[in-house]
Length: 404
Image (cartoon, rainbow, N blue to C red; front, top):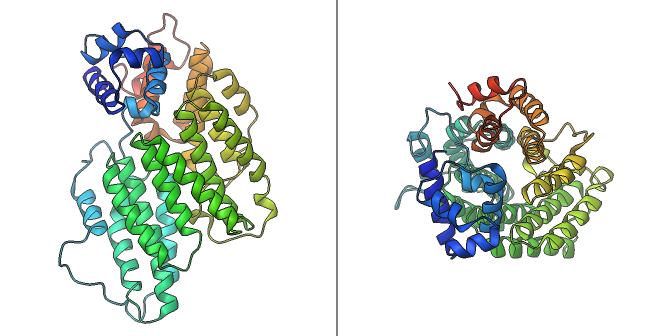
């Protein structure tokens, strides 16, 4: 992100939060002069601790302040043909043709496999290929909802809900949260007519995440807690899939609470999640894990690391991450975020060598993701400003374009 972009984003987020520069200064413990210089673009990008403090004062993720990583390759366009095609699939043209029943040789199992594969690619940050696939996935799912067979129609609505949920997640990654909410609202309508009782709470979780991206933390907290309580009341947490969905909602609620400044409540929710996560392996197996919320002892620990480093407890984050053994089903996106958070924690504690070593590991497992991630760039830029550069830093700085 350029200094100009940072200044514009800081001013926009501050105004959206209804804060004066003085009020943001008080909430973040960053001087008014620094805030003013950043907004007026008279100051170069601040050090990471300052950016962390400003993000916390605004109640947003640091990546929201820095700018989200692009969801397409560096050669892509956020409103290019692929995204327009996805938008049209989510919002069909007015007076367009009604969906027609699928052909006799259509395979619902194959459609479900294609949607599950789309989620796998999404978690691997292969957003270009997901956008390629989504228009056909959504169209094929809509055709199943027009089937004369009632059972198949219910399965079709479930498939449509998952395809639209995937489109919503991609839209968030593109910075198009309003389109994401439209897609998720349509998915919720499909869930009401589907045969999957877990689909609605999964979609609520996605909606809560989108609200978080919009800074609507109270709304995100409220709907996540309500959906989690409803699942408990309905007895939907006695299967592995059901408990995973409940866990995803609970961790989402904890994130909203933490960003709102209620760290005690966030810690309580995460403790509940960690306790329940131990039950997942003991419960009856469900369906395709690619189609269900991410929730396991590993994912809870990763989220605890993220919250600790984000809210100024880097030593706790490093202690939580030490000796972690990730399950094989932990998505690549969660693994990469863990490494990035550990690098942030090392930077915050002044361990430049530890940060570089972690970033080198991240480069090995997710080079493309790292190269386009603004937070990875910010960490390396921060390290490069130090008087003494640890071994390996120049290679990372050249790789990320911090130095030529």
